[in-house]
Image (cartoon, rainbow, N blue to C red; front, side):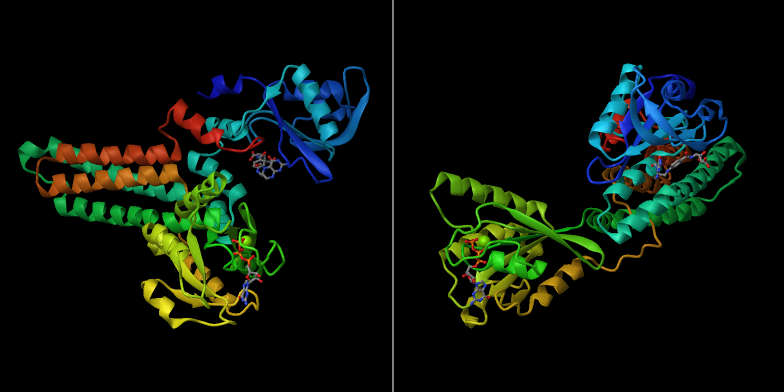
Length: 457
Ligand SMILES: Nc1nc2c(c(=O)[nH]1)N(C=O)[C@@H](CNc1ccc(C(=O)N[C@@H](CCC(=O)O)C(=O)O)cc1)CN2
Ligand SMILES: Nc1nc2c(ncn2[C@@H]2O[C@H](COP(=O)(O)OP(=O)(O)OP(=O)(O)O)[C@@H](O)[C@H]2O)c(=O)[nH]1
Ligand SMILES: [Mg+2]
């Protein structure tokens, strides 16, 4: 597939952020990258260079009008990110300059790169495998230090290597099982069932460990989402401000002060925590309010933690009960927070709250806000970053299938249905693992993966 792929379009895209920075970076990859650049770049040593190097000079357009003073980086195939000839232009950080340069290349026969297309080419040209490609996307979007560490490990090939080792073990057993078949008539056992069973168990353990890391992996990758809900005027926005340690949201004694979602973030233990303050939920016939409530309730299933806030100085009322009932389905992630304890704490409310944690705070006086942060820290359990953590849904799905297939193989072996079936099932596991690293794949799957990358990756 390689040669074919190399000969395709020359593609271009900005690869740095386009707002704020003082320098922008543009990448051009493909056969025309060097030739086009040499026609519009003032530094004559550029086109003669054989090796990767950088050059300083002026970039001009077709009318010889200067576009910018730039640094051009030359990467000769296959020694580049994509494995093709690559030119990177580092220009001044003005979107107008960047656009003019890109338009020049488009007029000269390049086309804009699709999201993830550079990385897709790197994969197609064998520079990286699929796990590594996906780790680049995780690396960019990681919302915690641990997720970042894990992504870097995967980019270095740690997970890919472990998969390769598992596959080698499997392939060895498969060939021994097949050898057994050849010698079946002569009654020679090349491999004992017990040995194969032991191997299957060993591999199942490894896969189980990957699967178990997924929930935590996703959390570390995306950060923790915490929703603050409760009826109007119980102090949700006050709590939001207390958690953020700033006056982010408007607070007032008029019920219905917050009308839409307000979110903001902090880092706790190097994990991004996103708080969402919502409009107070009340039983209402008002169309607009009903819609707001519907949207808030949709968030119940999306978030990782729900803080149900109530006024602890007052008896719980129908509006509180309405919400408590709604939250029953999400019980395992709800924390009850009794606010306004500076006024009073009514013990009688406790009986309605079940066995979930109950925290007592005063948002206004910022009392006991730490107890909430401690509950969030509990979610961010101690994770061992020495081990591979899975955070990718595709990889998770394939690992689950591999586990099922291993179970099947184990069954077949213990039921002594025949070694040829065991071998077949183990081969299926090998294929599933090959799909993870992308040795086995198809165009649709690939397009799907890379389409979710950002532009310029
Ligand atoms: N300017 C720039 N910075 C960047 C990237 C990039 O593409 N360009 N990266 C993009 O994500 C990351 C680094 N990843 C890269 C990986 C491989 C090669 C590369 O050209 N490798 C060749 C050449 C090495 C050499 O000349 O010594 C090779 O390995 O053969 C470049 C960047 C982060 N920073
Ligand atoms: N005494 C006391 N008053 C509080 C406390 N927390 C909030 N309040 C007051 O309660 C009123 C409502 O506070 P908000 O934070 O705006 O309440 P909310 O739940 O966001 O209200 P809506 O946005 O209208 O749903 C304000 O007057 C706050 O000053 C508290 O811990 N103690
Ligand atoms: Mg509010």
